[in-house]
Image (cartoon, rainbow, N blue to C red; front, side, top):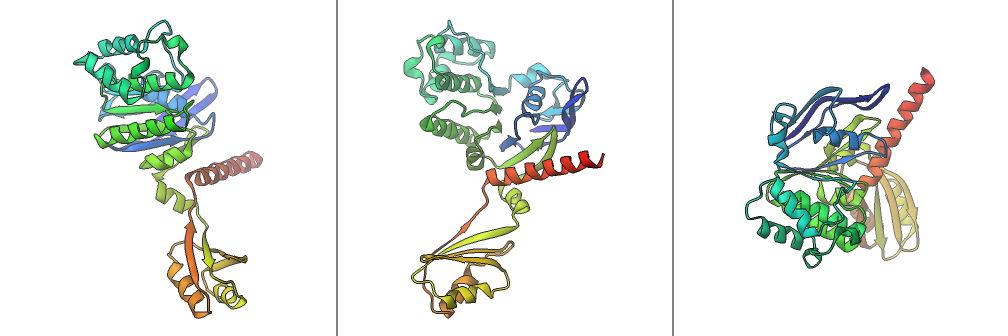
Length: 315
């Protein structure tokens, strides 16, 4: 659905995007992540045809973007990080403008529908100059939806929103995906990316560092797992029994239980429960602490920074 091959963008001597090859399947929610200055916005601008690549190719819907730009653009919805609103218009007038531009059928019905979805219907006749940042963000989402696009490019879709607004946008993302829409999302709110996306790509210094499902991505950078066990009573026999298990790296005990660091790759909970029972302990609860996407993101980018530093020292 979205594919780049060797995508590169240079500004004089600076390479913002370097030989980037990504793919997004039809009906997928894809998270595009990277620290500030990584090349995310430049990549999105090229995907939208607003920046011309120095090298490489872009395909949307299996068609080269450069060959059929205008036909492709009609099937794409965009929420930009920066809002370009006509502040002397009302929300209704603003959406009428874009509905006409995209030749939306039954525009009045569709405009009312998207305004209800972003909870702005009751403010539809107010001038945009009086809108808050959060309201402008919601209106930009409505604009992206008004022509019922097949692909949605969302750059920081939950920026400036309160917790309720964040949930509303999350619900819209999931609803659009349930209809079969493909979504390409760039965001610094990694907890939301983790909750909504099927796969992510991580970019740093213009280069793709990783592209995988959330589960596989976290597995690749996890060196050990942490298992937290709540016990009825913590005895020295229980602690010693757990420490003797081959897969256990470290055991920290407290009055309420154990914090166990163990090798990755297998589910160790059954063996831990058995050992605790054999040494006279009673398990009240047990949970495995999983690496978050944010933690995986930090590890992957820091590893890359370390490699860049070593390369700089070697040269």
